[in-house]
Amino acid sequence: IVTGLVMFIAAYHYFRTGQSFVDAYTLVDGVHVPTEKAFNSAYRYVDWLLTVPLLLIELILVMSLSRSETVSRATSLGLAALLMVALGYPGEVSESNNVRLIFGTLSMIPFLWIVFQLYVGLGKAIESQPENAQSLVRTARNVTVASWCFYPVVYFAGAIGLEGALATVVVEVGYTIADIISKAGFGVLIFMIAMRKSEDTSGSKKTAVPAE
Image 1 (cartoon, rainbow, N blue to C red):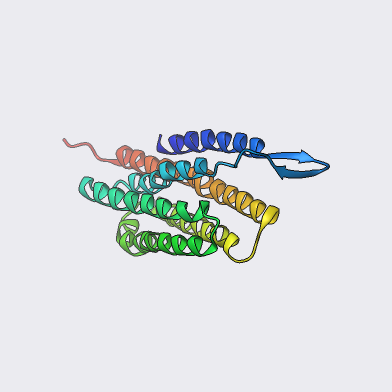
Image 2 (tube, rainbow, N blue to C red; image 1 turned 90 degrees about the horizontal axis):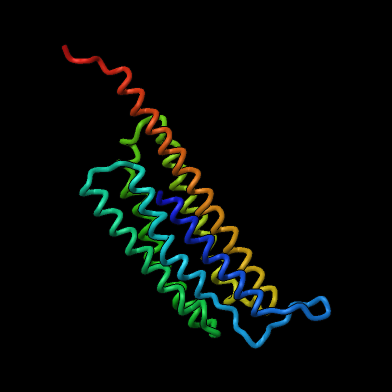
């Protein structure tokens, strides 16, 4: 359900992003040139504000931890994800490379904390997962971190000398590739984990000896 919600939110905002891109650029003599309408990158950040916390929450939910630990970890990771995205937006829309670097660096603080929690904080919780699901949970965690590491690379592209059309293409295509992996790919892994754990639960019930 959460994976479906993430994909619905992402699909809507990608549709709006596409509309904004079409309005912001027009084809003249084989070259796309800017129109009087600015490209609205806020659609992407609104998408991330909603979906990034949900991606972490669905990983916590599928692990079936205790109620208290689920609430605690989902809340802390979700808030950290919100802070990470919120800190990145001012730099994204700024024309100053220095501002982009400052807010990009600030957004890396909650990002690194999330990575630490996924690898250290959830270490024992992952080890407690059913054997047939442990490898998939680790893969889901690794995919999350690996795809998220791609975002800073794209984010700082505009601050290291890339300008004009090249910078626009790198940013938009880079973010899109990262989104496909971190949302669609991650969602498939979450579904597979849920199926593995359901099969494990069903198998346990079938082999249980009824009390006399």
